[in-house]
Amino acid sequence: MTVVTLLEKAYGPFPPAAFEPTFSSLCRDLKVSLKVLGKTDRGWIQIEVSGEDETAALNYLDQTVGFAPASLDKSKELSTLRGKIIFSGKSKNELCVDVGLFAPVVVDATIRLQSLQAQLAGGKALPLQRLIEAFCLYDHMPLSVKIVGDVGGVDPSKKQVEAELSEAQLSQFMRWIRSFLDRLIVLGAPLSDVEHAINVSKHFRDIIKVETLGLLEHAILCKLGTDAVGLIPKLGPLLPTAILAPFCPTKIQQLINRPFL
Picture 1 (tube, rainbow, N blue to C red):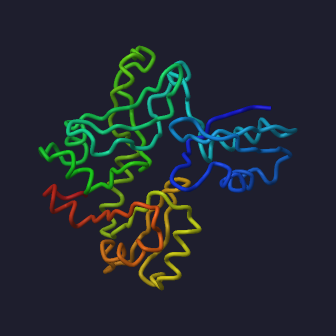
Picture 2: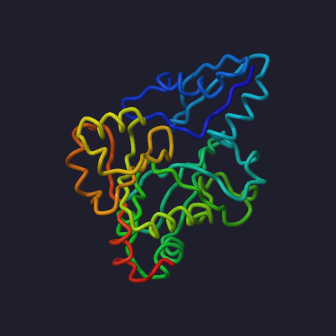
């Protein structure tokens, strides 16, 4: 029997136990029992796995969902960490990412404004709030970061480690921009609710697909000519607990005033 903390959060009106069938289905072909135990203070879901194929199940869950590193000792050899944005908009100088480090104390990854300006805006001195709005950097948005410096040498008393966007994260943003297609980011709703809202509102003809970013985070890929902003008043009432934010390549290019080739 093994207890692990997944790199997925339960928040809003959705209790951790509601996702037990989702995780169990990932291991349906293995001889294991999976039980959701609850969540950490920051919302990371904790599960218990036991059975004949426990090792195989844990390896598969680590590959498909990911495990939180939990402690600095376990993250020393990692150059990149995945997490979710927290406290968005509360600082004018940095973006905070919860990367699942909570032992012996919570340690967050922080990205300085200057780093975001260099990576996302070609060095243009844009305010943090403008970058947050343009790239949908709101609470719970999944983000991959690269640790700057030695994680093992971090002073836990500072409760933060300096980071920057990882190459994979930058590639995702650049790919989205180069597509010239709007995306409506949904933060705080399961996939079934998002699909239901699209069908009920009869906007399935306006979208290409729903891209899953996390358990409760998705990107609705719009067809050419469909404005993500225009979908918000249509889908918003059907997803009352979620944050809906438009990712608009054309507006990003106008804001930053440079091509993304």
